[in-house]
Image (cartoon, rainbow, N blue to C red; front, side, top):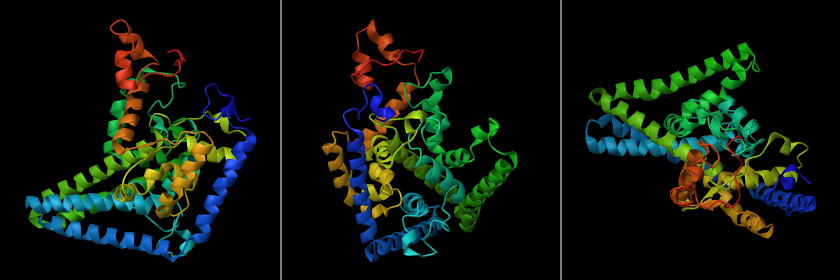
Length: 391
Protein backbone atom coordinates (compact mmCIF):
# COMPACT_ATOMS: atom_id res chain seq x y z
CA UNK A 1 0.00 0.00 0.00
CA UNK A 2 1.36 3.43 -0.95
CA UNK A 3 1.93 6.30 1.47
CA UNK A 4 -0.88 8.25 -0.14
CA UNK A 5 -3.29 5.33 0.29
CA UNK A 6 -2.53 5.25 4.02
CA UNK A 7 -3.14 8.99 4.41
CA UNK A 8 -6.36 9.96 6.19
CA UNK A 9 -9.12 10.97 3.75
CA UNK A 10 -6.95 9.77 0.85
CA UNK A 11 -8.80 9.91 -2.49
CA UNK A 12 -7.26 6.55 -3.45
CA UNK A 13 -7.73 4.62 -0.20
CA UNK A 14 -10.24 2.36 -1.98
CA UNK A 15 -7.70 1.24 -4.59
CA UNK A 16 -5.50 -1.80 -4.09
CA UNK A 17 -1.92 -2.02 -5.33
CA UNK A 18 -3.20 -4.26 -8.11
CA UNK A 19 -5.85 -1.69 -9.09
CA UNK A 20 -3.18 0.99 -9.40
CA UNK A 21 -0.90 -1.14 -11.56
CA UNK A 22 -3.83 -2.17 -13.78
CA UNK A 23 -4.70 1.49 -14.22
CA UNK A 24 -1.08 2.14 -15.23
CA UNK A 25 -1.20 -0.69 -17.76
CA UNK A 26 -4.36 0.74 -19.33
CA UNK A 27 -2.71 4.15 -19.63
CA UNK A 28 0.31 2.51 -21.27
CA UNK A 29 -2.04 1.06 -23.88
CA UNK A 30 -3.50 4.51 -24.60
CA UNK A 31 0.01 5.93 -24.92
CA UNK A 32 1.18 3.18 -27.24
CA UNK A 33 -1.83 3.64 -29.51
CA UNK A 34 -0.96 7.31 -30.07
CA UNK A 35 2.72 6.53 -30.63
CA UNK A 36 1.83 3.87 -33.20
CA UNK A 37 -0.60 6.15 -35.04
CA UNK A 38 1.55 9.30 -35.26
CA UNK A 39 2.02 10.32 -38.86
CA UNK A 40 1.72 12.89 -41.61
CA UNK A 41 -1.53 14.31 -40.23
CA UNK A 42 0.26 15.27 -37.01
CA UNK A 43 3.34 16.57 -38.82
CA UNK A 44 1.17 18.72 -41.08
CA UNK A 45 -0.59 20.12 -38.00
CA UNK A 46 2.54 21.46 -36.30
CA UNK A 47 4.02 22.77 -39.54
CA UNK A 48 0.77 24.62 -40.29
CA UNK A 49 0.67 26.11 -36.79
CA UNK A 50 4.28 27.32 -37.04
CA UNK A 51 3.68 28.88 -40.46
CA UNK A 52 0.49 30.59 -39.25
CA UNK A 53 2.19 31.92 -36.12
CA UNK A 54 5.14 33.36 -38.04
CA UNK A 55 2.91 35.05 -40.60
CA UNK A 56 0.70 36.46 -37.83
CA UNK A 57 3.70 37.85 -35.93
CA UNK A 58 5.31 39.32 -39.05
CA UNK A 59 2.04 40.86 -40.19
CA UNK A 60 1.31 42.28 -36.75
CA UNK A 61 4.77 43.81 -36.48
CA UNK A 62 4.23 45.29 -39.94
CA UNK A 63 0.95 46.88 -38.89
CA UNK A 64 2.63 48.31 -35.80
CA UNK A 65 5.00 50.29 -38.00
CA UNK A 66 1.96 52.56 -38.32
CA UNK A 67 0.93 52.26 -34.66
CA UNK A 68 0.75 56.06 -34.35
CA UNK A 69 -2.78 55.55 -35.66
CA UNK A 70 -5.03 53.97 -32.96
CA UNK A 71 -6.73 51.36 -35.22
CA UNK A 72 -3.29 50.11 -36.35
CA UNK A 73 -2.11 50.01 -32.73
CA UNK A 74 -5.12 47.96 -31.61
CA UNK A 75 -4.93 45.53 -34.53
CA UNK A 76 -1.17 45.11 -34.35
CA UNK A 77 -1.08 44.72 -30.56
CA UNK A 78 -3.88 42.13 -30.59
CA UNK A 79 -2.18 40.16 -33.36
CA UNK A 80 1.24 40.28 -31.69
CA UNK A 81 -0.24 39.20 -28.34
CA UNK A 82 -1.91 36.18 -29.96
CA UNK A 83 1.25 35.32 -31.91
CA UNK A 84 3.35 35.38 -28.74
CA UNK A 85 0.85 33.17 -26.90
CA UNK A 86 0.79 30.61 -29.72
CA UNK A 87 4.59 30.60 -29.98
CA UNK A 88 5.06 30.03 -26.27
CA UNK A 89 2.27 27.56 -25.62
CA UNK A 90 1.28 25.46 -28.63
CA UNK A 91 4.71 25.62 -30.27
CA UNK A 92 7.62 26.34 -27.91
CA UNK A 93 6.40 24.50 -24.82
CA UNK A 94 5.34 21.43 -26.79
CA UNK A 95 8.30 21.28 -29.19
CA UNK A 96 10.72 21.49 -26.25
CA UNK A 97 8.87 18.61 -24.61
CA UNK A 98 10.01 16.47 -27.52
CA UNK A 99 6.45 15.98 -28.78
CA UNK A 100 7.61 16.34 -32.39
CA UNK A 101 11.09 14.78 -32.19
CA UNK A 102 9.77 11.65 -33.94
CA UNK A 103 9.51 13.71 -37.17
CA UNK A 104 13.33 13.90 -37.31
CA UNK A 105 13.02 17.51 -38.51
CA UNK A 106 16.00 19.48 -37.13
CA UNK A 107 13.99 22.71 -37.41
CA UNK A 108 11.20 21.39 -35.17
CA UNK A 109 13.13 19.49 -32.52
CA UNK A 110 13.52 19.76 -28.76
CA UNK A 111 17.32 19.99 -29.05
CA UNK A 112 17.32 22.97 -31.42
CA UNK A 113 14.24 25.06 -30.60
CA UNK A 114 14.75 28.42 -28.88
CA UNK A 115 11.57 30.19 -27.91
CA UNK A 116 10.41 33.80 -27.56
CA UNK A 117 10.85 33.88 -23.80
CA UNK A 118 13.28 35.19 -21.17
CA UNK A 119 14.24 31.70 -20.02
CA UNK A 120 16.88 29.91 -22.17
CA UNK A 121 15.46 26.68 -23.58
CA UNK A 122 18.11 24.38 -22.09
CA UNK A 123 17.50 25.71 -18.56
CA UNK A 124 13.73 25.53 -18.96
CA UNK A 125 13.90 21.94 -20.21
CA UNK A 126 15.86 20.94 -17.10
CA UNK A 127 13.57 22.62 -14.57
CA UNK A 128 10.34 21.77 -16.40
CA UNK A 129 10.81 18.48 -18.25
CA UNK A 130 13.23 16.81 -15.87
CA UNK A 131 12.13 18.18 -12.49
CA UNK A 132 8.50 19.35 -12.72
CA UNK A 133 7.21 16.41 -14.75
CA UNK A 134 9.17 13.88 -12.70
CA UNK A 135 8.13 15.29 -9.31
CA UNK A 136 4.70 16.75 -10.19
CA UNK A 137 3.20 18.50 -7.13
CA UNK A 138 5.73 17.02 -4.69
CA UNK A 139 6.31 19.79 -2.15
CA UNK A 140 9.99 20.65 -1.93
CA UNK A 141 10.91 18.97 -5.22
CA UNK A 142 8.57 20.53 -7.80
CA UNK A 143 9.55 24.20 -8.21
CA UNK A 144 6.48 24.84 -10.37
CA UNK A 145 4.35 24.31 -7.28
CA UNK A 146 4.04 27.82 -5.86
CA UNK A 147 7.33 28.85 -7.51
CA UNK A 148 8.98 28.85 -4.09
CA UNK A 149 7.08 31.98 -2.99
CA UNK A 150 3.65 30.62 -2.07
CA UNK A 151 2.11 28.29 0.46
CA UNK A 152 0.35 25.58 -1.53
CA UNK A 153 -0.96 23.16 1.09
CA UNK A 154 -2.60 23.36 4.52
CA UNK A 155 0.10 21.07 5.94
CA UNK A 156 2.80 23.62 5.13
CA UNK A 157 3.66 25.65 8.20
CA UNK A 158 2.15 29.14 7.95
CA UNK A 159 4.45 32.18 8.28
CA UNK A 160 3.59 35.92 8.16
CA UNK A 161 5.45 36.12 4.82
CA UNK A 162 2.56 34.24 3.20
CA UNK A 163 0.13 37.09 3.93
CA UNK A 164 1.55 38.80 0.85
CA UNK A 165 1.33 35.80 -1.46
CA UNK A 166 -1.66 37.18 -3.42
CA UNK A 167 0.52 40.21 -4.22
CA UNK A 168 3.54 38.04 -5.10
CA UNK A 169 1.33 35.93 -7.34
CA UNK A 170 -0.05 38.98 -9.16
CA UNK A 171 3.43 40.42 -9.70
CA UNK A 172 4.64 37.03 -10.90
CA UNK A 173 1.72 36.90 -13.36
CA UNK A 174 2.62 40.28 -14.86
CA UNK A 175 6.30 39.37 -15.25
CA UNK A 176 5.81 35.64 -15.66
CA UNK A 177 8.56 35.00 -18.22
CA UNK A 178 11.11 36.64 -15.91
CA UNK A 179 9.78 34.74 -12.89
CA UNK A 180 10.26 31.48 -14.79
CA UNK A 181 13.80 32.49 -15.76
CA UNK A 182 14.58 33.36 -12.12
CA UNK A 183 13.44 30.05 -10.71
CA UNK A 184 15.15 28.16 -13.53
CA UNK A 185 18.32 29.64 -12.02
CA UNK A 186 17.51 27.89 -8.70
CA UNK A 187 18.48 30.97 -6.72
CA UNK A 188 17.26 29.47 -3.43
CA UNK A 189 19.40 26.39 -3.97
CA UNK A 190 22.43 28.60 -4.63
CA UNK A 191 21.83 30.76 -1.52
CA UNK A 192 21.54 27.58 0.55
CA UNK A 193 24.97 26.49 -0.68
CA UNK A 194 23.63 23.54 -2.68
CA UNK A 195 24.53 24.89 -6.12
CA UNK A 196 28.05 25.44 -7.43
CA UNK A 197 29.01 29.13 -7.62
CA UNK A 198 30.65 28.88 -11.04
CA UNK A 199 27.67 26.96 -12.42
CA UNK A 200 25.27 29.56 -11.03
CA UNK A 201 27.22 32.46 -12.53
CA UNK A 202 27.37 30.75 -15.91
CA UNK A 203 23.62 30.15 -15.85
CA UNK A 204 23.03 33.74 -14.76
CA UNK A 205 25.01 35.04 -17.72
CA UNK A 206 22.96 32.86 -20.08
CA UNK A 207 19.71 34.24 -18.65
CA UNK A 208 20.90 37.86 -18.89
CA UNK A 209 22.07 37.24 -22.45
CA UNK A 210 18.67 35.83 -23.40
CA UNK A 211 16.78 38.67 -21.69
CA UNK A 212 18.99 41.19 -23.49
CA UNK A 213 18.24 39.56 -26.84
CA UNK A 214 14.49 39.62 -26.18
CA UNK A 215 14.51 43.24 -25.02
CA UNK A 216 16.64 44.34 -27.97
CA UNK A 217 14.11 42.85 -30.40
CA UNK A 218 10.91 44.09 -28.71
CA UNK A 219 12.00 47.33 -27.07
CA UNK A 220 14.71 48.69 -29.38
CA UNK A 221 14.87 47.35 -32.94
CA UNK A 222 11.15 47.06 -33.67
CA UNK A 223 10.30 50.52 -32.23
CA UNK A 224 13.22 52.12 -34.11
CA UNK A 225 11.99 50.59 -37.37
CA UNK A 226 8.65 52.30 -36.73
CA UNK A 227 10.14 55.79 -37.04
CA UNK A 228 7.57 58.34 -35.80
CA UNK A 229 5.52 55.45 -34.37
CA UNK A 230 8.40 54.30 -32.13
CA UNK A 231 6.76 55.23 -28.78
CA UNK A 232 3.45 53.56 -29.65
CA UNK A 233 5.22 50.48 -31.06
CA UNK A 234 7.21 50.23 -27.84
CA UNK A 235 3.97 50.39 -25.85
CA UNK A 236 2.43 47.75 -28.13
CA UNK A 237 5.31 45.34 -27.52
CA UNK A 238 5.11 45.91 -23.78
CA UNK A 239 1.36 45.29 -23.88
CA UNK A 240 1.72 42.10 -25.97
CA UNK A 241 4.29 40.69 -23.54
CA UNK A 242 2.06 41.57 -20.57
CA UNK A 243 -0.96 39.90 -22.19
CA UNK A 244 1.11 36.80 -22.98
CA UNK A 245 2.44 36.65 -19.40
CA UNK A 246 -1.01 37.04 -17.80
CA UNK A 247 -2.57 34.44 -20.10
CA UNK A 248 0.22 31.90 -19.63
CA UNK A 249 0.21 32.34 -15.86
CA UNK A 250 -3.56 31.87 -15.73
CA UNK A 251 -3.44 28.67 -17.80
CA UNK A 252 -0.63 27.23 -15.67
CA UNK A 253 -2.51 28.14 -12.48
CA UNK A 254 -5.66 26.42 -13.80
CA UNK A 255 -3.75 23.22 -14.45
CA UNK A 256 -1.89 22.99 -11.15
CA UNK A 257 -3.59 24.98 -8.41
CA UNK A 258 -7.43 24.83 -8.31
CA UNK A 259 -9.27 23.34 -5.35
CA UNK A 260 -9.34 19.56 -5.68
CA UNK A 261 -5.77 19.22 -6.99
CA UNK A 262 -3.61 17.11 -4.68
CA UNK A 263 -0.09 17.88 -3.42
CA UNK A 264 2.32 15.24 -2.15
CA UNK A 265 4.98 14.85 0.51
CA UNK A 266 8.52 13.84 -0.47
CA UNK A 267 8.23 10.51 1.31
CA UNK A 268 5.08 9.63 -0.63
CA UNK A 269 7.11 8.92 -3.78
CA UNK A 270 9.69 6.61 -2.20
CA UNK A 271 9.74 3.42 -4.26
CA UNK A 272 7.06 4.80 -6.58
CA UNK A 273 5.96 2.41 -9.33
CA UNK A 274 4.94 3.31 -12.88
CA UNK A 275 1.27 2.98 -11.94
CA UNK A 276 1.72 5.19 -8.88
CA UNK A 277 3.50 7.83 -10.98
CA UNK A 278 0.55 7.85 -13.37
CA UNK A 279 -1.86 8.15 -10.46
CA UNK A 280 0.05 11.12 -9.04
CA UNK A 281 -0.26 12.92 -12.39
CA UNK A 282 -4.02 12.23 -12.40
CA UNK A 283 -4.54 13.58 -8.89
CA UNK A 284 -2.12 16.51 -9.25
CA UNK A 285 -3.64 18.13 -12.35
CA UNK A 286 -6.82 19.88 -13.49
CA UNK A 287 -8.36 20.64 -16.89
CA UNK A 288 -10.13 23.60 -18.49
CA UNK A 289 -13.37 23.02 -20.37
CA UNK A 290 -13.85 24.94 -23.59
CA UNK A 291 -13.92 25.10 -27.37
CA UNK A 292 -11.28 24.01 -29.85
CA UNK A 293 -10.07 27.61 -29.98
CA UNK A 294 -9.68 27.62 -26.20
CA UNK A 295 -7.65 24.41 -26.32
CA UNK A 296 -5.46 25.78 -29.11
CA UNK A 297 -4.76 29.07 -27.31
CA UNK A 298 -3.73 27.18 -24.17
CA UNK A 299 -1.29 25.05 -26.14
CA UNK A 300 -3.71 22.20 -25.35
CA UNK A 301 -2.68 22.60 -21.71
CA UNK A 302 -6.41 22.87 -21.07
CA UNK A 303 -5.89 19.08 -21.11
CA UNK A 304 -3.36 19.35 -18.29
CA UNK A 305 -4.27 15.94 -16.89
CA UNK A 306 -3.56 14.27 -20.21
CA UNK A 307 -0.41 16.35 -20.68
CA UNK A 308 0.96 15.30 -17.30
CA UNK A 309 0.22 11.67 -18.09
CA UNK A 310 1.78 11.84 -21.54
CA UNK A 311 4.02 14.95 -21.76
CA UNK A 312 5.83 13.84 -24.92
CA UNK A 313 2.78 12.93 -27.05
CA UNK A 314 1.67 15.42 -29.75
CA UNK A 315 -0.52 18.10 -28.19
CA UNK A 316 -3.11 17.89 -30.97
CA UNK A 317 -3.96 14.34 -29.81
CA UNK A 318 -4.87 15.22 -26.19
CA UNK A 319 -8.49 15.94 -27.08
CA UNK A 320 -8.72 12.46 -28.57
CA UNK A 321 -7.23 10.88 -25.45
CA UNK A 322 -9.28 12.84 -22.90
CA UNK A 323 -12.54 10.79 -23.03
CA UNK A 324 -10.58 7.56 -22.49
CA UNK A 325 -8.73 9.08 -19.53
CA UNK A 326 -11.97 10.45 -18.03
CA UNK A 327 -13.54 7.00 -18.33
CA UNK A 328 -10.61 5.54 -16.36
CA UNK A 329 -11.19 8.15 -13.63
CA UNK A 330 -14.87 7.27 -13.40
CA UNK A 331 -14.29 3.52 -13.42
CA UNK A 332 -11.78 3.85 -10.58
CA UNK A 333 -13.99 6.27 -8.60
CA UNK A 334 -11.54 9.19 -8.92
CA UNK A 335 -12.41 12.86 -9.43
CA UNK A 336 -11.60 14.27 -12.87
CA UNK A 337 -11.06 17.91 -11.90
CA UNK A 338 -12.24 20.15 -14.73
CA UNK A 339 -14.16 23.40 -15.19
CA UNK A 340 -14.47 26.52 -17.30
CA UNK A 341 -11.61 29.01 -17.49
CA UNK A 342 -13.46 31.43 -15.19
CA UNK A 343 -14.19 28.66 -12.68
CA UNK A 344 -10.62 27.36 -12.63
CA UNK A 345 -8.97 30.78 -12.44
CA UNK A 346 -11.36 31.75 -9.63
CA UNK A 347 -10.72 28.49 -7.80
CA UNK A 348 -6.94 28.88 -8.08
CA UNK A 349 -6.97 32.47 -6.83
CA UNK A 350 -9.35 31.53 -4.01
CA UNK A 351 -6.80 28.96 -2.91
CA UNK A 352 -3.99 31.53 -3.09
CA UNK A 353 -5.91 33.84 -0.75
CA UNK A 354 -7.07 31.03 1.56
CA UNK A 355 -3.58 29.62 2.06
CA UNK A 356 -2.11 33.07 2.64
CA UNK A 357 -3.86 32.97 6.04
CA UNK A 358 -3.42 30.58 8.98
CA UNK A 359 -5.58 27.46 8.71
CA UNK A 360 -9.15 28.17 9.83
CA UNK A 361 -8.48 31.89 10.34
CA UNK A 362 -11.57 33.19 8.54
CA UNK A 363 -13.82 30.58 10.12
CA UNK A 364 -12.69 31.63 13.59
CA UNK A 365 -12.93 35.34 12.74
CA UNK A 366 -16.51 35.12 11.48
CA UNK A 367 -18.00 32.61 13.94
CA UNK A 368 -19.15 35.32 16.35
CA UNK A 369 -20.92 37.23 13.56
CA UNK A 370 -22.71 34.47 11.71
CA UNK A 371 -21.17 31.02 12.04
CA UNK A 372 -19.73 29.81 8.75
CA UNK A 373 -21.55 32.29 6.51
CA UNK A 374 -18.58 34.29 5.26
CA UNK A 375 -16.28 31.29 5.09
CA UNK A 376 -18.83 29.36 3.04
CA UNK A 377 -19.38 32.29 0.68
CA UNK A 378 -15.65 32.74 0.08
CA UNK A 379 -14.26 29.24 0.38
CA UNK A 380 -17.26 26.89 0.28
CA UNK A 381 -18.45 24.59 3.03
CA UNK A 382 -15.55 22.57 4.51
CA UNK A 383 -15.97 18.84 4.38
CA UNK A 384 -13.26 17.92 6.90
CA UNK A 385 -11.68 19.63 9.86
CA UNK A 386 -8.60 21.61 8.85
CA UNK A 387 -5.33 21.28 10.77
CA UNK A 388 -4.75 23.78 13.52
CA UNK A 389 -2.99 27.06 12.82
CA UNK A 390 0.13 25.73 14.50
CA UNK A 391 0.47 22.93 11.95
